[in-house]
Length: 204
Length: 182
Image (cartoon, rainbow over all chains, first blue to last red; front, side):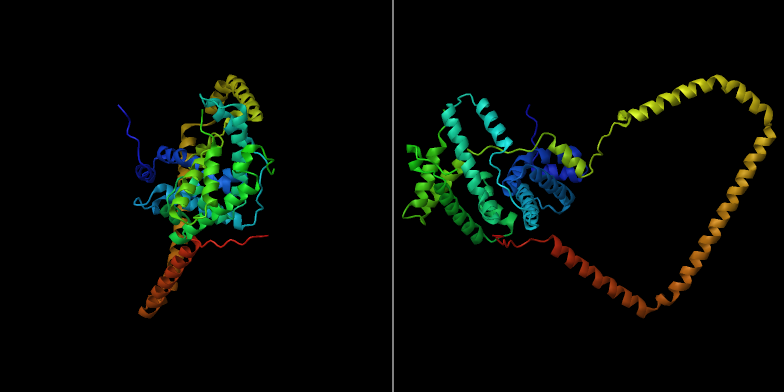
């Protein structure tokens, strides 16, 4: 017999009735996407951890204002967006890590877990590509970065991005279009593209 | 063998370079390829115990501290226990000596005195409270006129609306205007 998996709205309702387990379940359910989004915005794991905690604490304190007709993830991403933008506006200089330990661990664990593991050369190329893509993303302005991460990394719809950022639909689509162009230019400048397969030297 | 992300990268960059770059087809191809490419990014996750830290931060659960973790406290407790144990040897003769000093009437007299003192203290508190109450009545009497009540009500309404407006401004949606520091 399969246990009923509670929906986000049901967990919210349980939390409002005082269930700590329900809120813990919500945190566990959304900790990865929220943390992932925040970290790729602020580029620092320690700051991302702090901001991600703040996002969930704010969500808990405002839970009574959540309207179940909207997706909980959209509402949570909106809080994450505001929290991250406030942090960036405080003028904390952004850092672009050369390589994070987390990336190395995540890549290694993913590779080790993969039963059809690719060759070391392919794995290294995959890591190299991921690193270049991360670097290209970090160079985008925050509103483009947010839109790109939500749309391509988290699979959010245009409507969800509008709700999270408070921007009109046209602006979101324009931001995504321009962000994609800028990413393509950045990746090409870093030496990626069809020519890179022939062994041309890539920019570091 | 996993598909190479290089294929997705090439499809994406080719779609971006396409002469018909603004067409819906090129945009769809670029979107699909870029989504596939993003799947190559490592999945980021917070350190273990993230949910516990969130709950502690939200004060949903108190941070658990081991009271007996302090070595000094453990030593104090140990010496206290030894002192009490040694003191218990002298407890019975001490109690017998105290019993010879005090009779039952002494104990009753002591209790009655304590009740009397307590009653006097309570009476003092009641007198002070009555004085404060009469002071409050004297100050509030002029405020009971209709004009003053109306002015107070209007003032409360205005301040309530102003507070609500301020709260909405502080917590409402923010418009994003990014200023490039460079």
